[in-house]
Image (spheres, rainbow, N blue to C red):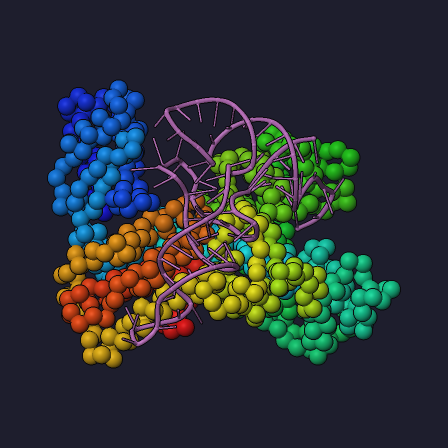
Length: 561
RNA sequence: GUCCCUGUAGCUCAGCAGGAUAGAGCAGCCGCCUCCUAAGCGGCAGGUCGCAGGUUCGAAUCCUGCCAGGGACGCCA
């Protein structure tokens, strides 16, 4: 419908150019938007307002000229000029209702597009180091990152989900020392407990499994415990594998799968860190000072230069980061999105600067970042800060166990990434209308129920009869649903382009709302075969779009509640 | 002090590549199940869109300054 209107308006603009009403050189991007108020029709354009100045006419006069120049079309019932010069379009019922046919015809593919043309995109998210179970912040990253991937896939991109971690740094040896202490029977309150050691109860489990000689297998490794209580290296290797498995189980419970697990240590082993240093040095962007090697990141927009090789000879974290991103570039990813917590925001400028200093043709603003703000968890109105298992933080698993995977995903992805999120456990648990996840899922289940009813009444859905009579969907409530359905492909597109998964959640809530309103206003199971079937068709189309949208969020669409 | 994010109804938040009287849920009040799932729907009430300027025919949306909250400013990751 919208595209039809744009085409018509393009025709009108051309005609007006011919007549000399509009100057030849105007090339307006024609914007047609769904109206908020139904007294303004179904769609509106601000075209006349935009072109009033170049045309040297009053907006309303120009609007009139545009309307008069509009090619005839069956799709438009009538037009109106309103306010300062908006042109309002009232869609012909039949044309608006054709979206039902389109949705039923496309099925799962309704809303999908080939915008990305198969281009490779890599999304790095979660990227937790294997030192503990995933926390809520990782959960937010997982929900947003995975939804983003689904959106990109739906818009025609070839997506690689990647998880980056370090299995050899200072934090890992801290992990090993912590497990070692537990192996020795020490508790965190003991005087010889390692400084900044990990205190969570899961360390006890690691220690026990290590001593028991167990084998653990994670998505990217399998290790059998040596059980030697004094072999710190063996403990470390086992602990890393153990926690990788732990995190895999968390992710699996959340329904997130990765294509690639990338090890920071591999960058050293493959000489990629050294190669990066060499490149940066050869390019003349480094200097020695205070016994350390610095990268002149200020040349590329950073507010101060950064140390890349420490006085003790080791590299700072930022160097492997640059090497890693160079590797992404070399793997052919023109688009890379890093989904991280906002506490990593200081790395953005640094990594980009480092990549510029390599001078290998990487664009300035590459890669993209989606940074999410903090998550606060509340129960009974009080902030929850601890979990027994992890010690100092609330785990993703706690949430999944308590409120379920669907609600957790929905809640964590339903808000803009850059606003702080309060995760209200009571709300997410509640099986009531207060809970947005249930609200959407219920709409889906309601359609399913309707169909079951129809089957039971020996009145199965008659596809052809329904599609031949879609113009019967002419109540305000039905039109609202039709218009909402028609918007879905664009919402998916915008959500993918802007990297804003929350738009899908918002859309689903709106669609579910329109549907519930319609459900209460218009009875579907009527005796009239034709009427009943067209209404069933609207229900089916709604169900399909709810399903497609929920799928983009990785949330299930239940047949009954 | 510098940088990033946020500030919209009592509460939780949508809306922000500018568009018509600013939306939803919860909380409050009043209604709707002899009828397809009331996990639902309708109505009432509730707002200086943090403040002040600016750009524009038009600003919650863009620009500047200020205020408030959060985060980041490490030879930690």
